[in-house]
Each structure stands twice: as C-alpha cells, then as structure tokens.
Image 1 (cartoon, rainbow, N blue to C red):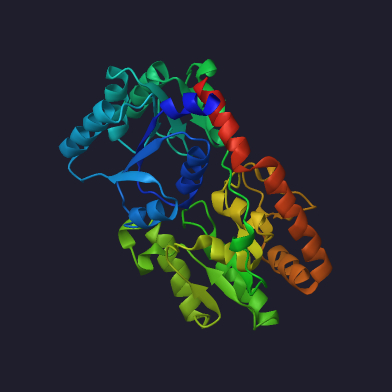
Image 2 (cartoon, rainbow, N blue to C red; image 1 turned 120 degrees about the horizontal axis):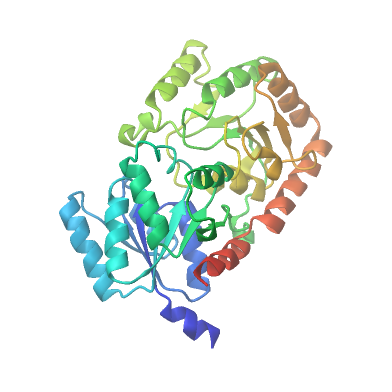
Length: 365
C-alpha cells in the first residue's frame, strides 16, 4: 500500500549543472523505494548521459537557450505531472523555476549545497536576497546541507520553520564493487576550489616523497587538463601543476582531471587527504571512508562531526605535521587498519543512503 502511494509522488529535479555520482546515489534509492524522479540537467561537464545510464536514471539534457529551457520546463510540468519539485539554486534560472513550479501548484523543495546565500544582503535588497526570500515563501521546505548555511539562513531572517538539515550520504560498497589490495598510498579526489588547499597539499606530498620516493600518489580535479570550462579555480590548478612540474614530481604524482570512475580510486586508496576550509560533509570524503581509506583533514568547518581519533585525523595546516602523520600511518599497518575499519563503520552508521532517504521523506511530509 505504501509503495503505491509513493509511486504517485512523482518528483521533478531542476537546476543541476550535470548528473554525476552524487546525484546518481539519490536517483538509485528513489528507484529502490518506488518513487519516480526525472532530472532536467544542463550537462556542463558533458558526462550526464554516462552517469544517467550508470544509475538507470531518467534525465533530460536542457538546451543552452533560456527560452527553450522554459519551454522544456513547462512541458514537463504539464506532461510529467510531478507532485514535488526539487530545485537547486544555480543562478537566475532559480527564480524562473520557482515561479513556474508555484504557478503549477507543485510542492517545492529547495536544495542548498553551500554557497547559495553568500551573495544575499537584506540591506541592499539585491536580487539573490529577493529570490531566496520568495523561495522561502513559495517552498514547502528548504533542505540545507552545510552547517554554515544554517547561520546565513537565520541571519537573513528567513522562516526557521521552513528549513531542514539533511547532510550528504553515500551508498555502502557492494561486494562486487570491492577491489582487493590498496595500491594508491595517497589520494586527493575532489574539485579544486579556493577554499581547498591543493597547493599546500602538493608541498606536503613533495616532502613525504623525499622520505618515501616509491609511493603511488593520485591527485584529481585538475579540470584545466581536459575541460577548462568546468574548472572552478583555474589559477589554483595552474599554480599547483606548475609546482609539480618545477619540482620534477610529474612522474611521482599522477595528476588527473575529472574522473568518472571515482569509486575505483576510493577503493584503492590507503589515505584520503583533504585540506579545506569546509570539511562537513564532502561526498568524496564519505566515499573514501566507506571503502576504508583513512582520512586526514584540516580543522575546517564541521570536521569534528565526522572525523575523530578512532577513524582519522584532524590537523592544522602545518606541512610538517601532515608529513609526519602521513608517514606514521603508512608505516604502521596495524594503526592504519584499525582506523580504516572505524572509518567504514562511521559512514555505515551515520551517513548511509537509507538515513538520507528517511530524512527526505520527512521534508515532504
């Protein structure tokens, strides 16, 4: 009886730049729970069809012309007949998505991922503030994924009864996903942004390699290598790549752009390195921990909510501290294995897709 009811609660998801693994996890559990979901995506990275097929998801790639986007939106609101609309804020289209979804009397759930409220300012009464003020009024719920957003949301005077905290979650690895043996000693797998200290990390890795020159090190997210338009911080990328080249580390550090098969890298990693201003709750961090990679993160926002002395380390941005801790973990198999097992348990108990689904259903009720 419950499944029949859920099957009627169709959902249309709007505002995504592309369809990738982290959205695929959600599509997968919606499918498992018999909820029909369709995604209208912009496909900026060019890989949306690949990931949609991987997760058997229903997506429609939108044209670049905004008038045609509106046409596609209205068509889907009429023909697909969703009961719920999940909207991600990706610029001015957010306002259009809001208005049309409200006009068609849909239950709107706004998803905030991290930076959407930074440009809002009540005193200036700017467009970003106006859009989100209207969003709060028209929406059924605001889903907030990061702790800092809660403070910003409240500071803007928005209705506190309208938001719910639902943090990122990941599916636990299946037996067929597991790769025997961990041959990647150090892994950085994330997009490269200003608040993620990838240049600091390159300097740390250089020092580690002086002591342990045979390590296998992989650093990904250098989108300027294969898709410059998808780069968040080209300057940071070029600066780090130049450092790696000038210090003759090209053969020591594998630098890659966007990787489609991220879970293959996570499953092979011994240590996951993440120096950043915002730790909680990074998808890639969760994915690596779910495969038993031991995390070393900086003392960024929310780090203590997931990392502790049992499952990893939180360190200040001090190169020598990072170098010493990395070497300690690589040389002490017993210590590393203990933390690896606890990393898996942490994700399994607190950040599984089952818990995410239950909270999303709560946002709908």
